[in-house]
Amino acid sequence: SLPDLPVAVKIGRLAVPDVVLGAPVTGSEARLTVNASGSLEGGSLIADLAVRRTDDRPGEATLKAAYAAESKRLDIDLDVQEPAGGVIAGLIDLPGRPSVGLKVKGGGPLADFAADLGLATDGVDRLSGRATIGRDSDGYRFGATLDGDLAALVQPDYALYVAGRSTLELAGRVADAGPVTIDKLA
Image (cartoon, rainbow, N blue to C red; front, side, top):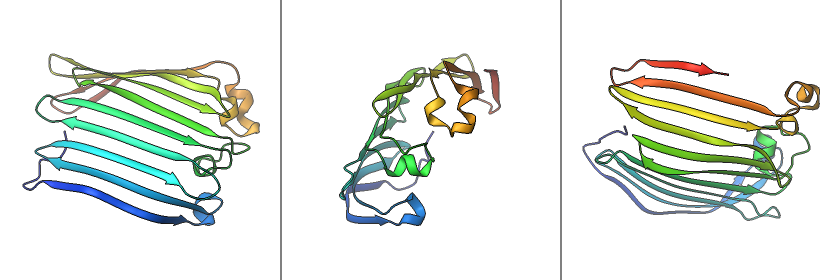
């Protein structure tokens, strides 16, 4: 749940025409523009964010997210596209600083929510999968299954350990009373 504040917070439009991230932060200077809008009211959220590079590397990230407290519905659409040498590749130290594409999209009530995830570098799919949330008698089940060839995402000294197909499986539960249980992590 999101905070149910005694007031509504509404941002009709936030526009920041020039943001400069210095080389010590991102590896090389990056100039961005940020546009956003959103509201948080009655425990419900609507958010819309767009970040675009305005320098010689035309990357962009967009996020549309909504959570309706009454119906407990969550919708998320994240799309990040960045050319080689971009901020994300620099921040997470991807070998060769390749182009990066990340997508997360899903929706539904938390009793039956699913989101698909995809990560690509240099136009090659590296990781894909699905995350789910479902309701049971006294809590929520959550899970994720992701697989891909991760060798290109790690430094060369470690690539041997993740070469070929890798799979991550996670399953767990959050009880209404609060405890989180991890049933499977492989």
